[in-house]
Picture 1 (cartoon, rainbow, N blue to C red):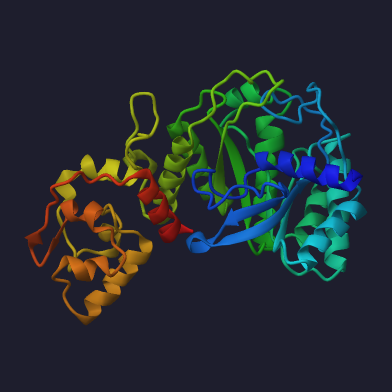
Picture 2: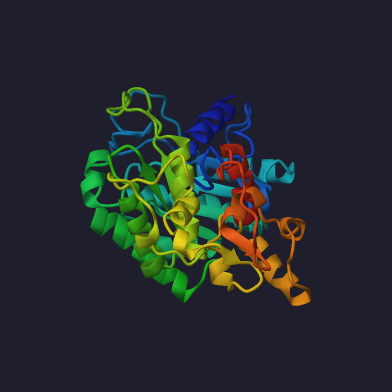
Length: 387
């Protein structure tokens, strides 16, 4: 019963560490009776169950938004490395989980907390587990520990939390943005260059708690991708927690999370530049219109685009054409000219989104309806094209 209580509580608390897309994109929520099993969204919407848990929720920090903050009156629990390793291996052998995501609060100091995580991983690997492990590196940990954990992990992450010191001070005033967090990510980046991890390195930003704008967030993300070669930046919408200083602050809209992920993909995989994205006067993306469509509507001189002669880079600018459908269009053009909407639809192109921006053999097929997709349709398209 003690282990069961630990697993339930420390599994539920691990949800604040983001390992996949926002709750808006989740194929299903955490399992009701097993909050430690996280259904992570994978390629083309497929789901992989991760054993996702904290080693402990004892913490020396007092972050204003965090359920584990030192000053919060709550149940405090810890797993010994052997306990946690045995639990994971039990659920893995039962085929309930496919991999491990391991994080922890920081107590009594970063090195001791990280050492316990390392011992847990070592036991699991010595039990001949060869599968996926994602380990969170805690801020302020010594280099030697990071290197030891990297050997046992497929992916490492260190949570940046905020886009700058200014905003971090509103969330975690006892953490140092430059010396702890940014330098920590730089260490992971150097390590990943020397000995590439199978799944690379990632970070997480909390969205909507400190007044930061989408433009500031995406500016930092762009720099992180360029400077540190991150595999992903995850955007974690703020959720107020009872008995914390920010408990009365409204939660971040999941649609805002979605727009950030859409913009992130445009910057990383579609050839867009930050200055091309459309922001409002406050520096935020539109919640009513996806970033690609917003760009298209402000660059009507670029359209209509002839499907049979446009380059890949141009095709990727068309709303309704993603990377998969773009590749299929190029392959189909090698066989014949695309002359009708049905051929184009068979490539996976979303016709009702694309038709206002294209021609086929010089013929324009404007729609009579609005070019917007429902949020459900946007979600389905995004999962298919990008994950």
